Image (cartoon, chains in turn red, orange):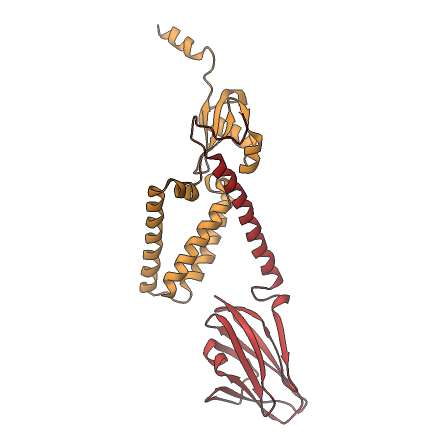
Length: 162
Length: 160
């Protein structure tokens, strides 16, 4: 008798179904392994695949390309040499979808504008870095635009997983 | 609305993961498996509740989970095919003392697992004392002992 033939006694077997189920099981294991491996690479945030940066003429930013809802993520805004007072303008998408938890250094002024949020920092003439920590709120792709003083805007997108 | 969707997603994803992990993990739970299940529970629990610890949210979640569970049990009752999908089917692993090795390999059951079940359930010592060993849908191995020659007759003779 073929080992994989269905037997009827003492229990009724469905070997064709069972063998298919064993295949499905193996596929499932590979999917789980793939999720774990992709997690290591940073496809789901916090890893080398997730490191992003955008640079314009002056201002540049390091951010997480992939992000998860409610997770705290960091943005590093690098300001080029310039005046003592620098402003960082962030668009509505940022204002609505991120809850800022900490900014280093603290802005000297923090105000709402019709199209977003404007933060003013006291920085040395040789420029410097502002770190902004925020929790992503919604999910989906967020198109963020950052602008410093009168420079052209810097736009970048972040995919936020639920 | 969010809570209900999250609960539905988590319910089916967890169901699929546990189903795909195979029957062995369900039936023969070791102390470590138990810890693993606690960790799985803990990590999904926070994803479902998020930062909403309200009574209303808890009520919505509990209702969703129980309704899904009842729905699955009804599907299970109505459709024999879905019963197989949801609960797996029994598989014979030992037929009249012979190991069905290829089946055992697929089901990730070893000869030691079968002998252990035979000892535990019937105090059997050898493979040839097993008529059937069946991997049940629940993940347990059940054993049908072979009737030992002479035993039944001697008992009957002693009684007479």
